[in-house]
Image (cartoon, one colour):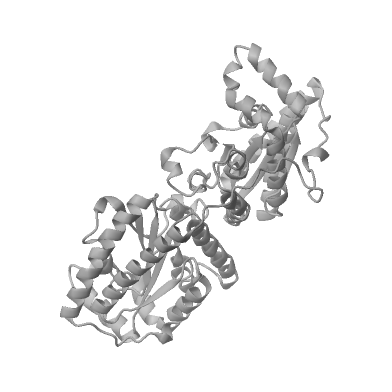
Length: 497
């Protein structure tokens, strides 16, 4: 790809001023369009050291409303970043709807500098490529316009600029030892860049290659490509047809297995047996908490289930065994305004537990294919593609070292009704029962289908479901805590045999 660029291309000053002024006016107008249309925009600037990325950012933003954009320089990961999956810090910095976010370097340091300096081995590259492509596709499917630039320099030009910057007292601080390594290992870095560009130039996030030897040419090309990409993004939006309104599926088809019907809801424990097993499991889990803290292993347990299925009681029995300094329980309800302005996975990414800690989610990203599907908060294309997005997300969590557990607490409609009626007359539990609970109960057939589809399509080797028979609360609580302990023991055995 890079060999196709003509690095001798240039632009004289008069033509540069004329073109730059025209494009900046267009870009300012397009920024207003982005804000009105609530379209998030992501601009990625990659390329050689000293290729003029900083000046290009300054030029791009010179005529824009500063309230509508943010620039994120990608620095070495902090200790907090390193305690989570590597894409975590980039998910946190995604643009809100209507905002333009510019990454001065980005997640591509994973395929460029990390490879150059041996922080990413060749066998790990395909996983990183797959994660990057999934990340960008998920954002694009959610409506984000992604514009990626790689600014290319010749070897002689690179060395010349680095020497000039190093001699300038105002610019010398910007020249890193890693930049000199790019010049020293020019062929290797160029080969890594070629490989990354080929593997990550996709229909939803193509690369634009910029000849960088002439700064004026590079700036005008970057501005022109940005204007063209935003204009094309608006054209695609206007051409989109509204999703079809199909009737909801109220029953499983003959070809679809009913996984919930296979659950033995008669499972139960006596009170004495419950106390003994619970005590043993809680002691076991308390000791394991010390081990995961020592070995910097993070655990995430998510709890889904029918209303009144006993999620809160199961979570409490897990946390009763734990040191409160090393776990966090995060309940999820309807997204806040800030959360609604971003990809639906954003709020879950930012709540991931750090290495050595336990995170517990009361409800999770599965709301996309459950309540959002049934209640119509997500369109059919949105919730249908969510199955793949969720599987990719969970794969990245597991690849990032998280021990992931997924619980579905299952009860019968009769047991749910009994618990609802009990809550109605119990002054200490009345706050748990809402009109929404009764309305959801009326839609049990729709949720029954949605839950079965969820279990079928997100059951993976790396993130399997545990379906808990929860008609008997005692059995469900013990089953849950024993499963958590078993998963942690398995992770410790695999990583520290």
